[in-house]
Length: 395
Image 1 (cartoon, helix red, strand yellow):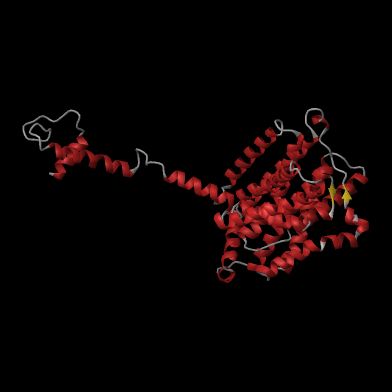
Image 2 (image 1 turned 60 degrees about the horizontal axis):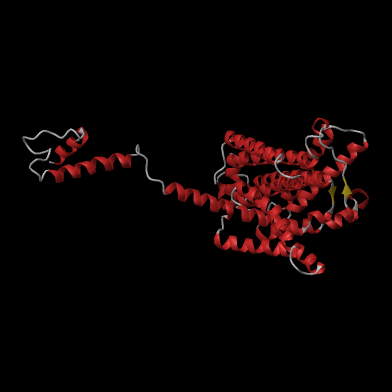
């Protein structure tokens, strides 16, 4: 799926955001919470789509970048709250800090991993996720150790209290941020940077010969992807009001990568499907295990492990049956439906077929002595001038 034009992407994002915000009035608060979580994951999956799907750089460290955004949000929000600052600044400044903190980490990773490829790059980024608990334990006085940090967040505006729930307000904020990320990434992929990124993915040597700065392109892609993941981590910290190392483990990194592949890692639209699956599939699996007539101990073991098994099974089936993911299936189905439509009346094919059919009919009609085309007989009023001219040409 090709990136949309800037105007089309903006209009689509505004329409989708308005529809989702309206949807929050029709669903229960818990569903609004799930929607906010899905939007937070969408930012991270969309950033991974740019890095891995368009750039071809396999990364398993997206959870570490989300953790950087979450802890940046937590530290800045708590510092502002301790200083007595409230209002929009307490809401927007921590989100900006989340984007900035993750982008700086992504810049460092990009500079360090600019010459790595394939499994070497995956192993390097994997080490970042594994190191998160050690980092939080080493700096436990600042990062809270294994327990993490509780965050002072800005609640919904006073004018909305009584009419809009807190979960609705969180969903609104997450929806707007996710829509902004999708617009920015779409415009980047559509422009010169996107073409350079795809050229580096296909053949970095050929891209270098064509004038593309390969190292700079890789560093920028890591930085942009990290900024998107950092915003997702900041949103997740705002929704859960906490930042802990257990929330950004290796399992989350694998989930993000699987979600991008299942949804369709070649397009940003696939990131939407992947984020929805990340939220609603584990919930459906947990609801299913809760209804099973098994012991509580066995049910607790199934809660996490069964969701991973189902996710992995879906991933294997999608790779075998639909390598382009859910969005690829939908795009292919749309092309097949458009291909089956009969040509319209104004197409060149229809303009050619109709006169030939009329000419063949009138030629066969000449075998009758009363046929309109025989000498001495009047032309039939139902015969069009185009048909007569075609018949004369054939004679």
